[in-house]
Length: 436
Ligand code: F6P
Ligand code: MG
Image (tube, rainbow, N blue to C red; front, side):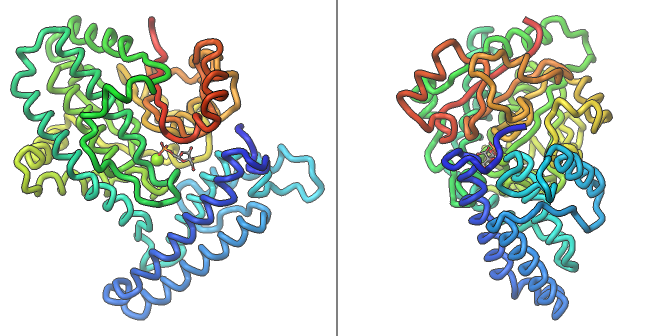
């Protein structure tokens, strides 16, 4: 599975060497800055907990930087045993004398997931601050800094809803494509690539869509439209078309995904949406239940009438069961999705009931494709290695050295002109797998 971090110059190496310690340092700093808050809430016990969490995170950073063996998790949590079994499995793949997987020698995807899981362990080992989300501030800031774009998006959406019934097929399709592209470029706003540095959508993204089109390397939007418009035409009254969105980042990206979800309902391309988020804070900016509810509440209380209308409508969708937020521990395990049917058969069975599944973001793409260095031209279907619960589409900006389903020569051409094209987030894909 994927590159180990040990290949100098690879993106994996740079992540493990530079970006990961930087994220840990920021996490430690966040704890420091919340010291007085912990004291106000919990008194001396809060201070002790802060110290403990900081020392556990410093230890973690040291283990990483000095390439120590990767150790089992110790604190009991729902997924501790699965993680430790996975560590044993990684160990069994090694033949070296001390037989222990290490930070720089193990597959990158595994090491990164393990780091975020250890951050969580440091927090849950430090009651009473064991429910503290160390990345929350950053996620919230990203939302606040993207206000201009949030207002533009919500206004566009609400205006569109007023006339949506009058649009002809072609107009509706064009609107669908616009909303999809917004959700794609929303994925640039991820905070783990930037090492936790602010990256928000400061300008109105809708003005950039045309200019960004050449950067879409695989564009299966037509296939999405055929699938969903066909469901709409053939749907019996009262029956359900369910679209599942496996969410990625909170902040601006989440807004773009909620806008997509609203569009699907308003246009009747779908009648029900299931969202999947993360059970624990993950890859800095990923969405948890708390983030999901927080953002909708923020919208509801906005001074802008369109933004606040979105908040009100979306709360109503949740209340009425048209929108359902779900999480599952599988999303924060290191496993590829090809193992889902064995590791999380309940989740796999649930996804099989969807009519279409959107997988947002880069990490989901890495897990869909097993984070392997496939040939660029390998079909997406093949790279999924048997994972086909329902028709699915990855909506992802490229931030890791894996990309499949390109035209012959396309990847080589990009490499020649822009050596870092795979990892900057400048390019994006809508990559579909399902019936033709
Ligand atoms: O640390 C880098 C990384 O793992 C990249 O794969 C990607 O840039 C990021 O984390 C996660 O991106 P996303 O939020 O799009 O899943
Ligand atoms: Mg993310």
